[in-house]
Image 1 (cartoon, helix red, strand yellow):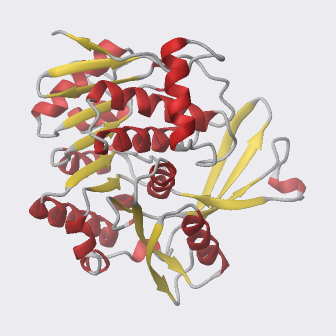
Image 2: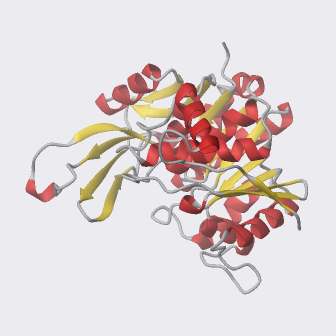
Length: 344
């Protein structure tokens, strides 16, 4: 079956220290993979949505690890192998009782050499897909990747394929002043736009912090106002992810708020990517916005409870169970509550 969702972006080898370890002390590392777009691809595949991932990797062990693991998760892999540039990597240092520390080695990686030509090579797959999912990380990798994202958006829109865009602003890659205009341009052409609170404010202000007219939303009501404004600027459905506070969405002048119940969070990395997978899977199944928000909240909460960027992504049956528990409050703590439409 041809992929219904096609994702585009860099995936890196992920090296993780033990929870109480420091790299300077030596010892063992866990080797896996991580990347926003591939995290979402895995989440979608586990939910039964045929998904493909487009990228570049080096002709090295990391590249082979990444492609093997994604295929094992049921993701179709459409990669170009670079004989010279390496696969990027990142190191996650875990410290008990303290925030994690992540270091990247991605400069000059194979994925940083992504160009529109690589997108053109899969143009038929883009036009055949229901959704192309992109993130704001890819254009931060350099002019070539930025142009590749633009090309993917152009091809998708000309073919009637929906564009899903997760802002995913990474301050380590570019400043808000650099990123704002670029990401806002893509956001305005997205059929589905995902953003965090600071990212939503950045899209409206072009700066890293909110302004008097567009402050960083700190509660669902403020986030809903941001979402409505972003819809007015061109985005179709706008979702603002609020973490422990749940999520909000705006579409066609209507606004919904979806609270979520606390979970025992072990590692929040990848929760936003899982949220996107849950939301898109529901949307592709013909579910309405409230149901899509609830499914996104539940999927994101599941990933938080397991170490790793994507390992906790639920299967279709597991997600159905989480949603049922959320409705009935039977069988343990709830992870999500019903969405409510807000009249404004």
